[in-house]
Amino acid sequence: MAGDEIRIGVYVCHCGLNIAGSVDCKEVAEFASTLPNVVLAKDYRYTCSDQGQELIKNDIREYRLNRVVVASCSPRLHELTFRKVCEEAGLN
Image 1 (cartoon, rainbow, N blue to C red):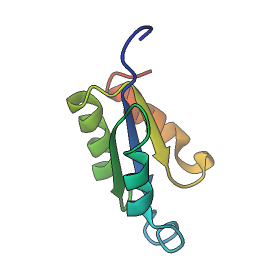
Image 2 (cartoon, helix red, strand yellow):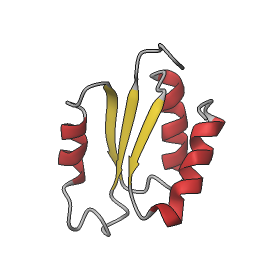
Image 3 (spheres, rainbow, N blue to C red):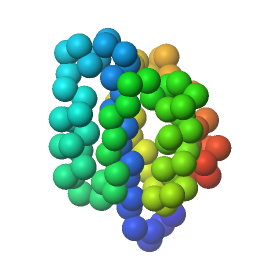
Image 4 (cartoon, one colour):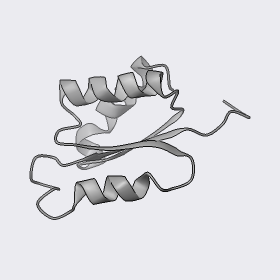
């Protein structure tokens, strides 16, 4: 990856209403999309769900993402889930 163009995907999880009840997830994703090297920024209701995980895997492949940021619940709950998603899509 050394020398490759940085291509970041940002995923802002609503966690149902746990996060979305306090944070405007759509606005956070819109702001993230303006940051340097962010190719894609999305908000999603349950990023840890099977559908959410598939979304991330497909986006990694389609948009050639080489970095992923997931703003969601505590890393203690889902860090391994998202690491596995990235690995399955070809990122380490």
